[in-house]
Image (tube, rainbow, N blue to C red):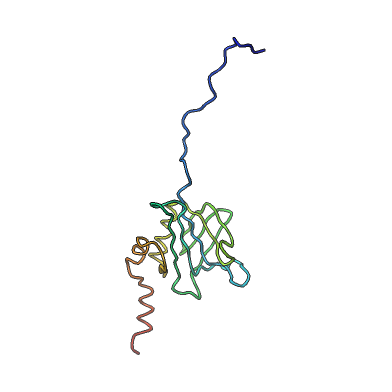
Amino acid sequence: MMTLTTPTTGPAVAGPVQRRVGLPRRLRIAFACNDHRNGDFLGRATAANVESLYRVGRHPWDAELAHDDWGRGCRLTVDDKLMKLRIHGIWFPFKARRSWFGNWCWEAFEFERGTGKRLLLLMRERGPWHCEAAASTFFRWWNRKPNFVFERQVCRLTRPR
């Protein structure tokens, strides 16, 4: 039985919390990869919407990317069991997936910030993607180097025969 004179142990408080305070710094990249008639996954992406889930300055940012071959797009493979996405032949681990994001034509994937940056760099360097709308710094970065695949298609169509 405890009385007022019984000594007690110290407070049950641990040391400082060893975790980051706030939301994780992630990127959400949504791909237009579902059938427009019924929402089934087609495995080909024709557009992408990039969105930061953290603030840069005062506001989060987003960007709209479109594939130059709108009718065909690029191949997109998703392994839900391993939580990985493959685009342009490279696998990228994702943290979360949301089907029918916004409407049934889109699938959204959340990536750690570094992984999302590598994915965007790959799409910019290897794929025929162009930026349609974005914050000015992202738009300038994306369009800094000409899109050589698009230029080859235009040259092929416009050269004299």
